[in-house]
Length: 136
Image (cartoon, rainbow, N blue to C red; front, side, top):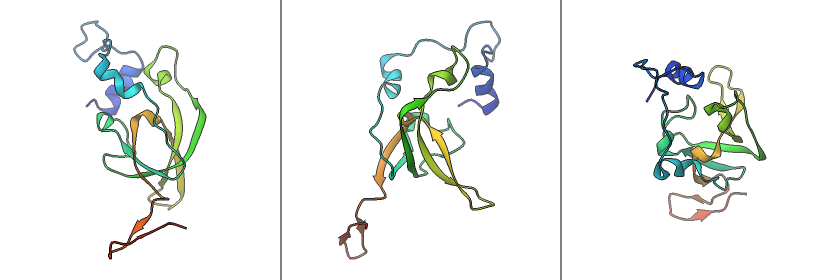
């Protein structure tokens, strides 16, 4: 996986590391593109983790960190320069995080195509006895 500086150089149009003048990209195969060809059905209150193929792509969340969806946008936000990888990304869900020093809850926008639902805050809670109790 590239370093953040390497990814930034790629996004800003830099050439590959060996500087041979060739672009650092090639068209994806269908198998490689599948991860970007769907939009999961997420709802506020869902627990999500990064999809395995995107592990290491973000500072937050990290692999296997469960996050709670706090917003789902009907119309994704697109940011970035024309013809850039950043512009192709779409920010359509907000995830809750807590600032480690201040304890302040915050939201960060993410592309839902890079997340996998693993549960919901509204799922029944399983007690040590095995009994499932609905969340109220």
